Image (tube, rainbow, N blue to C red; front, side):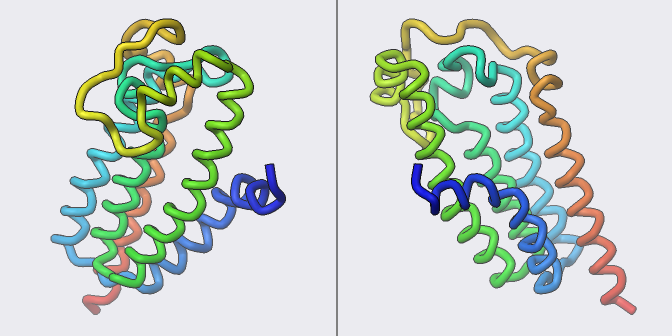
Length: 185
């Protein structure tokens, strides 16, 4: 992995905080934009929660559930969540910042993770990568041999700490509501 890739992987979360502050500074939320953003964000949270309920991090190659449609359903859900945040801010500047951040950082992270999974799982991952797209989901589930089997597990969801994304998004919506109220006075 290159030094630039290391930077993007290490700093993606840390740089997200100042980005969030900048997005809030440029935001011009209204109750309607917050509601529409919350609806889009809820879809993103659902995708992330559904994916987290199947994910066995560092244990097995997960290829069922949402992972049979896209290799990165958590990031796909995050993209929808970022879209919801952009809508809620009601700011083109904020929305563009969020989209550019996501596109730059997560495209590098997804490629790096694909390389790591290839090294770890070899031919099984190659078969999976040929059948399932990196990011944009397939319309039908890929039928693969090997990897994980099973169904959604609330225990997996909890173990993967996915509830934190919901709390973070709710906090963002509350901050946007406070910004709207402050600008009313």
